Length: 575
Image 1 (tube, rainbow, N blue to C red):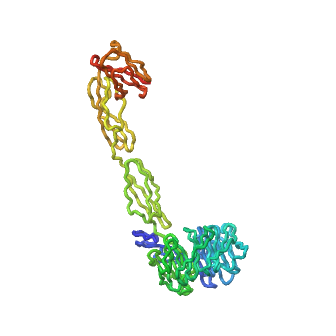
Image 2: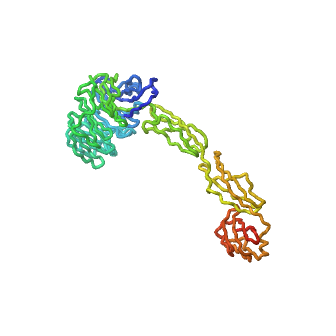
Image 3: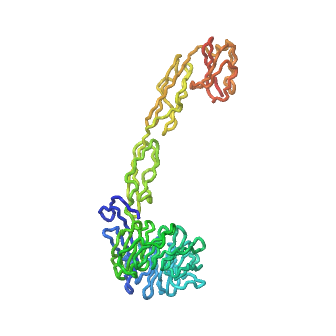
C-alpha cells in the first residue's frame, strides 16, 4: 500500500485528511432464493462516512436485481453476470463500469462459474448439464465449447485464462480449452486430490493449484504444462487461493487466519499465519463463495462475510504491508456477499517533491517532467519545456489520475553571466606599413552565442611610424564583455621596391602561385611576409626562393630591410 504523508483536500469532502487510503470495493451479492435482491454493489470510503451504493445493475437499467447472482467478472469495458435461481437463469453482458445491459441469454443450464478471457470472450461453466459455454461479447452469441473426448465431467468451481487457453478445474483434474478453436485440447492431472483453488502467476507463467489441506503444485504453461514439485504448507482447511507479486495467499476459514507462501523465495514451512480477521461469521459464512480479493497494485486485500446470510454482509479492507485494517463494517443492502473486487484509489496525485527547485541555466534548458505518487505519475504541461531566451519563466505542471489533478509551479531562470573567451590567449603584434588598413579582426568564443568578432573604437589605419595599442572589445548578446589589447608596429618609408630595381633587385612572378623569386645584389638583408591583417606569416634572410604555395590565396605585403636601404614594402598577390 502506498501511504501518502501530506495534507490534501479530498474532492468529495472538505475535511483535511492525512495518510488516508481510499478504496472502491465491489461486492457481488448472491441474494436470497426467490427474491430479486442480488446485484453488484460498490462500497467506498471516498465519501465520509463509508457508503454502500444501490445495486449497480438495477440502477443502470431501472429494473429489479437477480435471483441468486452466482458469479461476476470484468475485463476492460465489459462484464458478465450469471444468475442461477431454482428455475431458469440468465447470463448477462453489460458495459462496464456503467452496468447498462448489452445482451441477456436465458438459460436453464445452471451457470456456476465464469472467467473473462478478454473484452470479447467469456466462458461460463454450467452444471445442468455439465459443460462450458463460450460467450462471444462482440456478436452477443453463446455456444458450448467443443468436447470431442468427453473430458468435461462436472461443473467447474475455478477457471482462469493463461497463455491463450482456459484452464477449468473439475474436481481433481483441470480441463484445457483452446480460445481460438473453442475446443477442449487436453486434461491435466495435478494428483493432489480435489482442487480447492487455482491462480495464474503472469510473472513466472505458472499456474498454481491448491487442495484443501494446503498442498500446492505448479503447472508450467510455457513448458507443456509440466508439473512442479508438491509443496506441503501444513495449513489445514485451505481455500480462497489468490496471488500477488508471486506470493500465494489463502485462508483457513475456521480460524479466520490468512497464510502467505512466497514462490520466489520459498517461505519457511509449515507456514504461520500473517493475519487473523476479527470479522463476524462462521466457517461457512466467513469468506463465503469467492469473497476475497487483492489489489494488484498495492497488495492491500479485502475479505467479506455473509454473516447470517441476510443483509447486510460484512467486509474488511486490510493494508497488505502492515496488516492493519484500513476500513471495516457492514455493507448495507448487500445480502450474502459471495465475491468481491478491490480497487485501491488515491486522491489527486501527491507530488514526489513538495517544492520544485528553480531551474537555472545560462543559455538554454529542456525541462524534465517531475513525478508524483512515487514515480507512477509523470506531470504534463501546456507551457514550453525548452527555453533559450534570457529571462524568468514559470511552468505549471499537472499531475492527473482518476480522482483529480494536482498542480505545481516551477521557476526557470535563463541568465547568461559568462563573458566571451578570446580565441587566443595573447594577440600577436601587428607589423604594418603606413596607410595599410587593419582588416582581420580577432575573435572570441561565447558559451551561448558562439564566435564573436571583436570591435574597437581605435584607428585601423596609421599614417605615421610608431607603436600603437588597439583595444578589442568582445560583447555577447547578454552584455557580458571582455577586452584584449594588441600592439601595432607601423613603419613608413618612401623607398619602395622600385628603388630596389636600381640596386638590381627583382621580385617575380607577381601575382605568384608557388614560389616567389628574389634577385638582388643588396647585402645583409632580411625579409618578412605579412597577410592583409598585418600578421606575420613568413620570415627569411637573403634567400632567392620563397615558397608561398601553402599559404591561403589573397593579398600579402613583402617587407625587405637592410642597413643601407632601410625597410621597403611591396604588395604581393598569391593566387
